[in-house]
Image 1 (cartoon, helix red, strand yellow):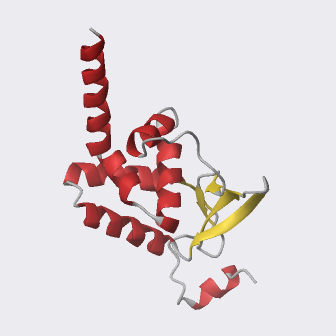
Image 2 (image 1 turned 90 degrees about the horizontal axis):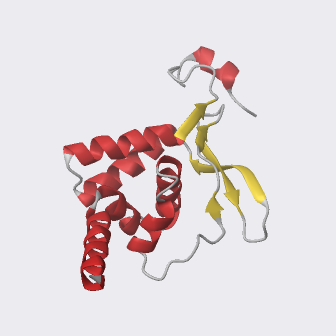
Length: 155
């Protein structure tokens, strides 16, 4: 009975590693990896520890520095998030991407590299969009080249 249980656990772990969430987490590195971990934690809060343990054998906990908030678009159009530092401080509003387009493109390159299926892309980008919980620009659709856009510039 115990051997059957072990087989089921291993089968479920393999399926989780092969799911888009596991593949995205395993392949994202550096800056993108930190953002992806935050995206997955924001969207799958109850399952993120299990996902990390399955994808990274021997994983016990997330260590600082790490993103400790969802993303926001600030008044200047940058994608920002809060970072938990190694010394325990929280650095508020750290720039993750200079524009929301840069954020989208980084996630698109990751999806392209992993060759996510159409369905997987749809699910991934739903999570990518959901991670941005606020857009603080007065008019996010305003063209920065428009002379009226200058009044919204943050100095």
